[in-house]
Length: 164
Image (cartoon, rainbow, N blue to C red; front, top):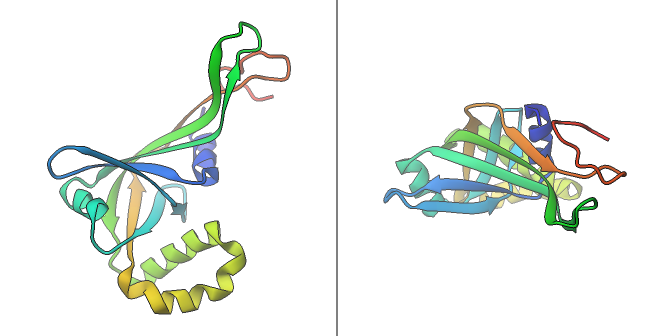
């Protein structure tokens, strides 16, 4: 699937797993609530210290992975046990945000994505918590890629980007 389709999956996913490499070379992946401000900049928030920030300091390269509409199923034509899904993956460089205005803008994007009906409380939450909240910017280094397995209404697998 094309990169615009993959971006749409990333925007719709309830969380995106971000995979880091720790200083000792071991892998560390964690599902996070990310929001984007454009097609290539994504943000998440976290505590001002911990595994994620330690890993970013050692190895800023990250991998993002998102899945939506993940449904176990039996193949309608051949009876195979399979999974219908829509997924996207992207690579990027992560770095802590130090500019206060950018931090607030990123937190606003995250809050707007996940709590749009509570934005009236945003300014007060920022006043209470900004000093104890870290924000990380992930800049994608290439457009995301996407994959899916999906059957049409006739039980045929839709391959090569075919839409119903």
